[in-house]
Amino acid sequence: MGVLYLIFIASIVALLIGISKLPSKGKAGELHVAKILSKLPPEKYKVINDLLINKKDHTSQIDHIVVSKHGIFVIETKNYTGWICGSEDSEYWTQNIYGSKHNMWNPLLQNKGHIRALSKILKDIQFDSFISIVTFSRDAELKIKTTKHVIYWDQTIDVIFSYQEEMLSTIQVEKIYNTLLTINENSEENINQHIINVKARIYNRQKNIENGYCPRCGGRLVLREGKYGRFYGCEKYPHCKFTHPL
Ligand SMILES: [Zn+2]
Image (cartoon, rainbow, N blue to C red; front, side, top):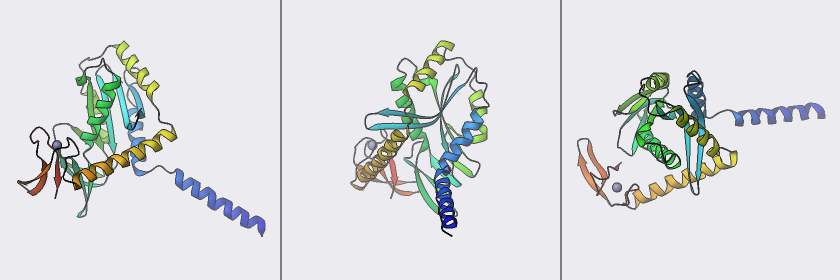
């Protein structure tokens, strides 16, 4: 009886450990896109998945980077369902599932931050060698007003192949790839610190907005009237295009 009980407890514990190790929805999306990227010819395209850059209190987690002669592709992967609505400059996009709306921070701006962090490390690389790609699962229906690459997972390879001009030499590609591998700090401890930093950043943003300040430039938020109703905008417009719904 005692033995059976122990076996029972042990299997419950094993089950719980198993569940806690299942990838989250976001992680599952990253794994899916990593698999897609692994089909790129490896001699021409160097892929780094899950790069963590650690700079004092500021960390950036980049889902995928593809380094090639045709540019450095910086890829942000999203695993969402429902309608995804927003525009290039709006601070937030909305996810609309059967009428219930959720805000997400504009992934294009998020990726812009990633590229800024990368260009600080790769100082001698021209800014236009970085190509931003935001890629969504087919479970989402994209309704984004933008000329940038906001695409579906299965279109990622085609977008990368659409760049044929040579921007970097073979030596530069090797150097960039090795530099990024060296600075990658995605240990469990650093990932946890990154999550804390992101939470603090979101909290500070929200706090600024509540106090009537623009989280992007520190200007005052003013009430504006737009085509689709009233919203808060930054006083520094058009220099700063921050907006926030009422
Ligand atoms: Zn502003």
